[in-house]
Length: 316
Image 1 (cartoon, helix red, strand yellow):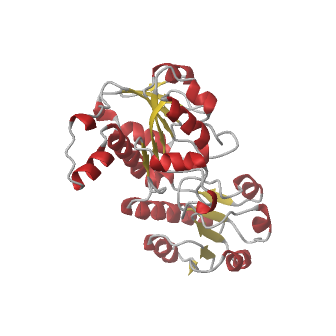
Image 2 (cartoon, one colour; image 1 turned 135 degrees about the vertical axis):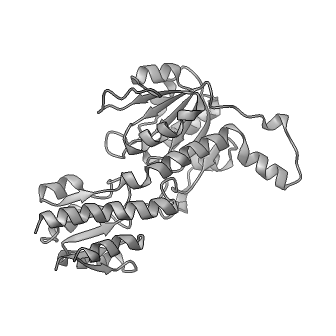
Image 3 (cartoon, helix red, strand yellow; image 1 turned 60 degrees about the vertical axis):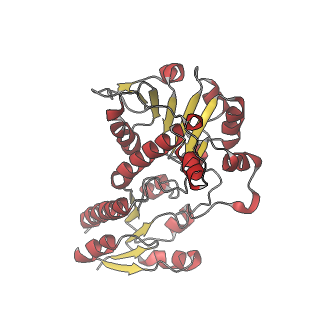
């Protein structure tokens, strides 16, 4: 019987489906990294979220390993290239949380444009300001979406009913235009966009993708949304352009100061740019929860189980 090590907790459907398919599952969610690294060599498959990185050393120590299931979208905590070179299949589940990410990006944008955070707090404190909290509509604006994978396409779909112009750029994809969006060059997005939303994986190419040069390239003053990875955005450069007024506001579900596991902020040395974001009324912050709904928890676990079952059955 093939054995699967579940390193992080997930929805019960994941290990239930694996066991129903004849695999033995060990749910060692509370073990330390050191304990888990010692256990991995005995398993044919492992399931991980973000507890620690699967490095070359770990992969070299696991001769039986055939599949790694990452319950989430990003794969930056796995050395995928090296795993593949050893015949280990790596699977993720962006299909499972794309709707959650699309909805949160839209919700954060509406919250920012309509001053909902501030207005709610004012009313709770007996303050009734109407003209001061007059907002802006999405209708009539141009939204640039950078990256048109599962997350970018889900956000675009959520925007369909808002009577806005949607420009989509993906370096690796073409023929994206349809009846509600237009494939675009970066140059056109720089020229026309009022709002830009980033939906990129984190890798060497996208680290600090949103930086001083990127932001300075926009003709208009803009709003920025980041539900991808914190290090896709240079916080110091963002704050520089918020101070100047080039960036009117930002919706940030992810921060470059998060710990590796995404479970907390690295509060040991929060730099000045982060202090600015914490104090600004023009910033909406959430703790990396855009893909973290009850529904996505189930869907991601189900998708990973299906992919792992298919991979392991092919390796019989």
